[in-house]
Image (tube, rainbow, N blue to C red; front, side, top):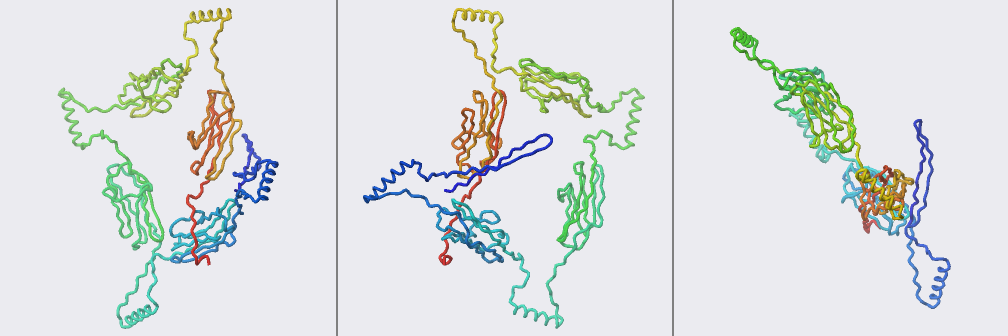
Length: 593
């Protein structure tokens, strides 16, 4: 088995705010054979074994020698592929010869434009060093660069050629009759023409120029309740293949009860019934035929009305009559009821903003601010933390007489963030912000919770025991370790399916019992199992991936974390896939000859 050396290109790159420079060198690690065929015995033991075999041979005893696997050279094509050019309906055939022809591990692969060839129309054969491919009924889309690749344990070789399959017309326009019949038909037509009989000739298709808009349409601005009209003129007017399409903001407009589309005598028109504000946009009319495309466009604006109509819809005469009646009632002392006019309030404004709050866990937090106008019934207050709405029973929200407040019962450190109070009414929006910091306590309480008097008594008892020579137990103090740091990382790894992958790195401090190591692929954690063997001992973290596939490729990350911080190292992992199916087809006897 031949092992390819692994070539690595190492870079040392220096970078600062003013620029970048780098130096590089190639590193070649010559691999060893995976299977060791040479004897590992000492020369003395080998000489003794050889002497024993010689004695057995002199006595006529059978001598069994170990089988040594035969090594074949890398494949080489002695007869390359030739270019092939055919027409649709003709089969294509490709043949080439490769050596060594007697290597049982030699594999042949056919490709078109770099992609493996598969299917029942392709007949592949390989025997006695001759490999061939026969394509039944190829089409023009089968054209491309044909490659035949040979591969064994010692290397790879390939040969290529160009394959062109010229397509036929989908519709056959030429007469398929024999020339004799065509001449007879032409003679009959000539005789009819000489006698004055009408002769029908096949119609020739007329070619029209590309469409062109001679008259476009202008921008249209209307108010809701009015219809909109667009019209334009396009040439040529007599082209039966000319098509017209209407679009709004690039999206096609479908004809219907709202959109009435017409196209007659070269005039294209669109009538929009009862449009709304959301129907505004760029209106485009596009004309298309076999020779080209042209279009014209304009802006369409539909100004919306108020959803609630507050003005009187009565005629001026009726309004004058009602007003006269109200005036007479007022002169007679009768109560006059006027319709309520909704009061308009200004946009909200915070007159007293929020203040920053910093507390410790176990203390409640309170926030207060003032906003105007305080008498607007449509004014709404919203509280947010880091831009997200605040919800839950621990948050008590109040708003009265223009003063809004929020009380947080028992906050934790994770409740810290930017607190925002937002006020909104029909006229506008305003908001105020502050920083909220809740300093967390230790999860495990290590300080004594006893009163100072009891602590002094216990300390006195310990001092007396120490004076009498009795053993005194002191609580162990926890050692603080620095943040982890990778002293040795790992490089990019590129393998082929069937090979295992190994990653190893070294991290400090090695004696931290709280140091944890996690492996990730493309940011997703890797779980230890029969395929992924993860180990971490004496500061060395390693991962062994058994039988990886191409889909296991990605960015491999090793992350180390302790109570003081986090560090990580990473590299690229590429697993190159192999063919799922290898085809070996025997040649026919007539091809061997």
